[in-house]
Every structure is written in C-alpha cells, then in structure tokens.
Image 1 (spheres, one colour):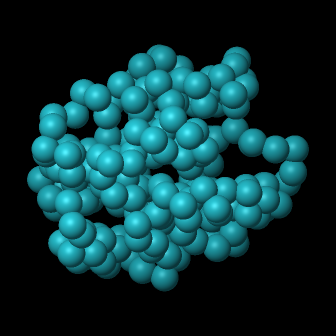
Image 2 (cartoon, rainbow, N blue to C red; image 1 turned 180 degrees about the horizontal axis):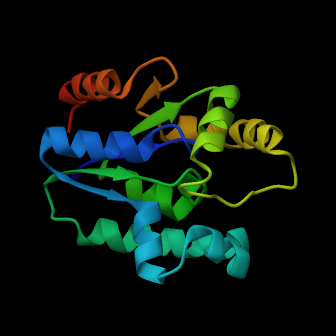
Length: 179
C-alpha cells in the first residue's frame, strides 16, 4: 500500500503550504493537484472555469489526480495536497481509500475570507456561486462538511496553529497511524 497523506479542506486552509513543509520534513514526494492541473492543461484554474465551467474543471481535476496517483512509486510515502473541491468526486474519494490517510484542514469562514482576500492578487480563484465571497464560503463549507468529514482520518484547525506547529501535530499523528 502507498503511504500517502492527503491534505483536504477548503481553499486557504493551508493545504499547499503544509504539504510542501511536510514533504520537506519527511523528505518525500509532494504534489499539489491544482499545480498539476495547470501544468497538464497549460491553463490557469480561472481560465478552465471560464471556458469549461465547474463541471468541466472537476472532470479534469479527477483525471489529473488519478494520473498523478498512478505515477507515484508503490510503497513510498508522499504528501498530496488536493484542491478544495477535489473530494466532491466519488471517483477521487475511491482512489484515496486504501492508498493513504486523510487530514482535513479547517478554519472559520471569517478566517478563510480574510486569507482569500489577502491572497487574491497572487492566486485569483473563480467564484463558485453568485453569492458574495463571505456567503459563498459559508455556504460551500456547510455543503462540503459531510464529505470532508467522511474522508478525514484526522482534523486540524489551521486557524489556531502556526505552520510549524501544524507540521509537528500532523507528524505526531502520522507516527501513530497504522499504515
């Protein structure tokens, strides 16, 4: 079995940052599904959403994740940072089961709104609803909570810990996981 650690959660919960830091600490492979998507399609995520809508993006996302997981060496540890909506795909959830464990990164809607607003100039993301950004976050968090919870083997609120402490907490948890 692969020893994969999946990081899931809403955008701006720290999946990319913590994925990179965990892979550095553990000296293992890491990939970020959003980065793989932009590399595979040679388009930004906002471009894909604009051209193909959310359903088209989700199809691409599902295929890119499947390809990346299949390309990972067997029986080696790796960290996988998934896009916020990646776990909405039943096929992606099936791929994750049996090949690793899942950490659900959380934060409050207020914290996420502030983080998203602060990073919007660097990494703009498309709106997924017609709601204002704060209401969109609340709605999507509520809508996705059951799926995130179903996937999670461990939950960590990134609003209350810094990056270094989050890496330490995940590392301690991972050490006790039956792989």
